[in-house]
Length: 175
Image (tube, rainbow, N blue to C red; front, side, top):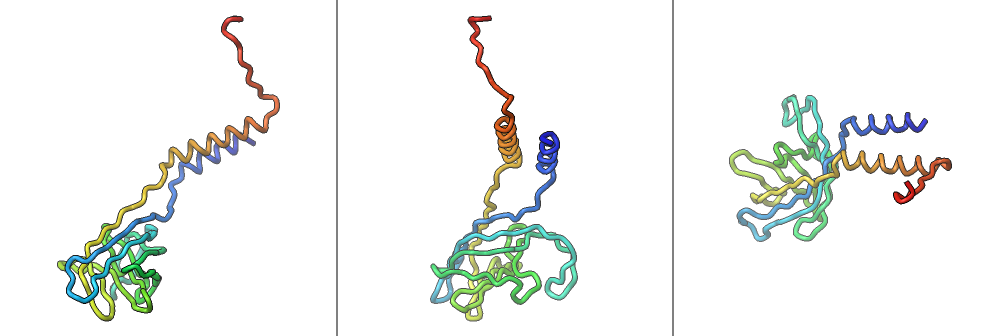
């Protein structure tokens, strides 16, 4: 039974995982043309999606990182992510650039979106500002280290559960 468990563990480690990816993000005003110059930061998670999607009125093949959660602040106020807001997919990254990320702060809806030639905009119903955007993937532990940890735990349980295993120390002087 232990040998079977060992092989199942090894095979499970070899299967590629499709987990969410965690990102740290921040944005600050590029130029400020209004009374308030918004800046924000936080974390979001994405998952890799593929398929045909209706993006902006046309069915198109899509391979990208779609947002699954968003937390953070905008000018010190808590951000509430709006999943599936006005689009079937609200919020995705295309080459690490935000596309239609929709959230609200104190009842005002904001969008982070890329405008070709103009950069990344933070827009609301009242105003829009170009912003400097930064998103950095938070590294996850390497699969090799996770496998090594699991194997060591399995080995420790195997040695504990076997009362007949004893380790004896022999002195080299008696040989």
